[in-house]
Structures are given as C-alpha cells and as structure tokens.
Length: 550
Image (cartoon, rainbow, N blue to C red; front, side, top):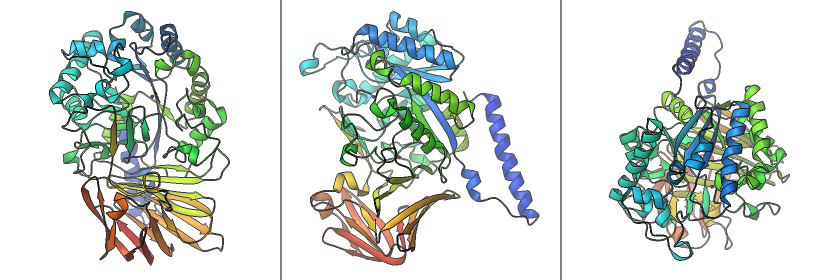
C-alpha cells in the first residue's frame, strides 16, 4: 500500500456437507450417544485471497517498473494456477499498454474488479473537476482524501464517479464488477454499489493510525463483516441497518503487532512498515515470518467461522520492491493449498460463500500464541456484531488491550458530509484502547490481577474461551460470547485512561460504565462491584460480566 461465483457445484457440496453434519448430530443425540462439541458448527473456513491491484496514473515509480510488476504478478498466477482477483483503477482500465499485461491472465481463474481511488481520467469521465493541491497540482492521481477518495465528493458526485467507472468496466468486460476495493470506502457508496450494481464484496485497509491520509480504529480486527449503513468500519448489529455485502480487511494483519505503532512494542520492528503479509514490506518478505502467518491463521484452537488471509501487491511499488517477497509467498501459498490447509479463491467467491453461510455478522477470531519476534507476547482477538476485543499477555501481565463496541447509530465522519481536508479518521466507540488512551502515567488497558505464566484458547460454540494460568497455579477464565465478556477468577479488573477528554467522560457506578466519545454516549452494563477510580474504573467479583449487546 502507499503505506497500500461461488460455482454451483461448490455451493451444493458445502450445503450438503452442512446438512449431513446436522443430520449426524441429531441422530447421535437421539440415540443417546456422545455428541461433538457445538464448536464444530462454527469451525473456521480457512481462506486466502490473492488480490493484486493496478494503477496507471501514479507518478512516483518508473512506468516500466509498474508495468513489469503487473507482468510478473500475472505470470506467477499462471505458473501456480491460482484463483485470483485483479482490481483495476480507472486510469489503468483506460490504459491499453497496462491492460495488455492484465489481460494475459487466465480468464477462467482471474476475477477482474475495480480499485476505487480517484484520478483525473475518472473525474473527467464523471464530469467533475480534478483538483489536487500543493505539490501534487500536476498529478493525475493523489493519495490524499481530497481529491483522491470518494469522501471528497457529495452524494451526487460519488454517484457520478461510481456510475462512470462501472459503465466503463461493463463496456470492456461485458458485466459489472463483483469485487471493489480501496484503502478507504464510505458506507453510502458501498450501499449504492451493492444495491445498484450487485457488488458481492468489498475490501479496505486493515486497521492503521493515520498512515497516508486515513486512519481506522475499531471494527473487526480482520475477516469479513456486513457493515453498518452509517459507518462502514462498524459491523451491523441489526441486518436491517446493514450493507448487504461483506467487507474484508486487507493484507492479513499481525494479531500481535498490527496495533498502534508496533515499534513501541518491539524495538526491532521496522517502524515505517505495516505489520502484515504485504510482500513489499519487511514482514511479508521474510520467509520465517510468512511461515508464522500461515500457522497463526490455520492452527490455533479457537478459530471460528472464517479465518481470512489476503496477500498481493499494488503495482505502484514496482517489481523492484515486490520481487523481494511475492515469489516466495506464492510458492508457500501453493504449498499450503496443496496440503489442504487453506483454500485459495477469488474474492467474489469468498464473499458469496460468506453470504450463503452467514445471514448476519458472525463471530471470528485471530489468535497468536507464539511471537515471531521472540518477545513471547500472546494475543487473541474476538469479533462479533456487538463488539471486538483483544486480550494480550506481555511478560507476566495479562490485560485487555482493546474493546470497541459496534453501534448502528454511530456515524462515520463523512457519511453525508464532504471531506474538505486531506485526511479521514474512522472509529467505533471505544471501551478500552491502549493506543488511544495509554501514556501520561496511565496504562490504557484493563488488567487482571496477578502474574501469569501461560494462556490457552478454545472454542465453545460461537464463544472463545481463554484460560490463563498464574505463576502460583491459580487460573482466570475469560469467555468471549457474542454479546458479552465473562471473566472468572480475575480478582479485580482495573482500567486506566490517560488524562484527557475521554477519561473525563467515563463514569462507573450503578451497575454499569458510561462513556462519551465524539459526542456519542453509550453504556456498558456490568455484573460485579464497579466503582470509579482516579484514572478510570475497577470491577471486582468472582464472576464479572460486561454486557456489550446494548
């Protein structure tokens, strides 16, 4: 990044498999036999999408290197016979030389879709002015939100841009695209594309903090979700308020280090690089770290519903940089697929399979109980339609590093407004966020009592159970359910926030905790003895419950 049809037979086989499993479960129960854990019904489908996207108007790299990047990416897809997705920016779509390389793809195994960043050719096709600013005045493409992303335009402008791009795509390919990607999309545009053109799936940037011109904090930490019509980062609580096609997070984020600024956790981390599988970056080019990604997304106990991986690279990096990691990754992807550990498919197929299997947002997890850096950190994420949460073990400390609510009423900043500045920052309502509220004498986390030696994870239906053992042999259990977090054996949960506007808006009393974020008020009911402290709040009791479903 600048930082960045389910076939009928397949669908029937999957449906038949699910029906057979249900029938076997019922028959065993009727016979009084021991039945398998309900977790089997939520067993993770382990999928990897190869998504390469193509620009032409990017003025930074040599044009020859951009064209070669497309040539080599297509050649690797052909070499391994990969199902893959290529997303085309409008300026690439109208560039005959670039498209000549793109169309060398195996059309039976390649999905073509749209990459939605603005450029001079697209704006002109839509009848809108192209107005880059400052040093970019002569550029035909710009990574800043204004003018480079849909949020820089009112609804009429967004509609005109979308219609122009879809019209040209259909003229060239004979059908509308089923997959659309961008580092940042808005909920209004997603809803319009899904309803008007039948887009099956979207992909956006993984969580990051204002890299380039956009920041995303909250929402699903990875995987797929139906977004709220008011905030594309937030999973819809009620499907009446949902865009009816799922959003995927791009480039396989690191469950430990893709949070805040990773070099603050691990001094050896190259601080300009995102901690993902992106092959043009440091972690995506190291064979031992890529092996770690495959283990993390396929092996841990507790993975549920969808364990989603994505890799590939924009051609703007040029082959000179992509070549360090992408050929190595392709060989490993082929090996993992041949062994049956992952399924490699087009993004549209993954989106359709998700829609067929899940009529509403479902729990998904990302779990890393080994640390590629050697520091021994352990991290488990749980995502549902009501919240996302992360528990982390760092040294002997065990704490909630992050809890964010999903709220259908919490609006994204430019849902109906035009972004006139250079950046856009997206959030969901925070309860705990170490990156946003740590520092200045406060940890920013919600800690469990004691010194811990180990943690283990397991699935129980759609719940993730984390069992943590202390050095003295006692244990604490954290159970993440769709609408609540239940903690047993914690002693006390202590939350701290750095002094500032958010901390001043936290009030703990009367069986719950009240929060205010960006003028939005919300409450988390609590079972346990809850009280305010100088830096936040504490909750004590043998069994503590946080109700995040309201």
